Image (cartoon, rainbow, N blue to C red; front, side, top):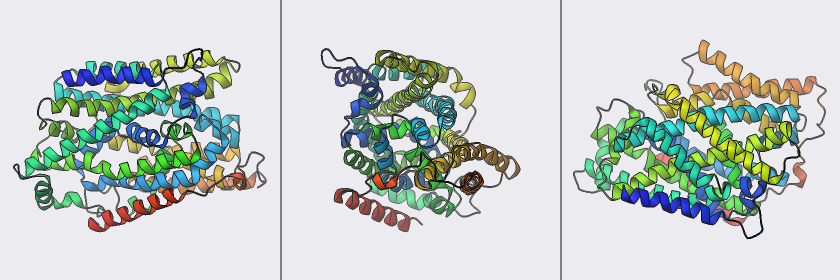
Length: 514
């Protein structure tokens, strides 16, 4: 507890120190929401991972590792190649537009209706699904490790993340994320090592891994057969060739919570280096978040809930070091909470408040509104977290399934907005609404269809809907269409070499555990 408290105090101090302003300069909207567009590549890469790897990843994916096995790592490994595609083809468009938010891009490309509707949607999704799930799984982990009451855990996480992020905004979040990622990787590798060493009865992690492969070989099937009871969650080759791509493009390419870091870069080249760095960190993540779950299936197969797997493995860490590991877990949770609330504040302030309520709001008032919304969203999430998620066995799968209702439409809106100049605003709205309606129909009338397959099918149908409506409206090139001729898609040699490395590593991994 002493080690953990020291971490907490240090983090708050560092967050305040890195985000302080020069004498006479008052923090404006660009400072607060985009870190003054000053982030270097290493901060972007670390912050992308810190924002992504939270309780829903560590606790949730370890739980899925316990229940399903290494196949769940496809979410991590395919994200690595997705990041490369985002850096190469999507990010140059966003940075050329000079935007603050994803809804702002949608108005630049389509119209005001699309911006407002999607802003309201993202605010609801981030607050009611993402923020609540991070809080709930984090409080669950704290309860399992310390015995601390879940309600107190929820309040502690909310207050802690707000205290270190509310003053400095994106700069405080992104720069302290470097510390969070170092802690996360150290603590994660420590839990993995001790779990494997326990399996081997003290003969080392490699021996433990070898024994685990022999004892639960079914947990290392990367491509599940239809006869596998978990096929509905990870349906075979569809994971590599189907709807998983849509899920990844939506999360890594068109998600304010993630993309905001790249928008805060010094330059496009700096942002691309950061994304390549994040891609390599993603390749490491299954060692930290999936292997302990599989180890728990060997060491503690009697666990009542899969989401108890990671906290159970953390009990192997001795006191003192447990403080560092516990700090790493809370670091991941707090980082994601701080990032999420900052994104909620950015969207509400820039897309709702400044567009509908007060178009002439001063820079200072904009920052005050952003801080107030961040606090309010956290209060709402604390109140609804337990009633919403308390009875779910695998929270990670719940998050993926729920967001899968909307992601096909989101990806259609952006991809057609980028690359097809005839797409209309009405077509974009129909694709967004159609995504939810079609997904709900498939969910209720074809429940045996794996949700990843459903995402892929609904994506194709939404593309058809958008194309038909655009052509029916006259099939003309839209006035606000993106001019790709003026955007630089050429990447530096270092980025291209990094891309080749990611591809070769992924081929090796899937070849080993096909």
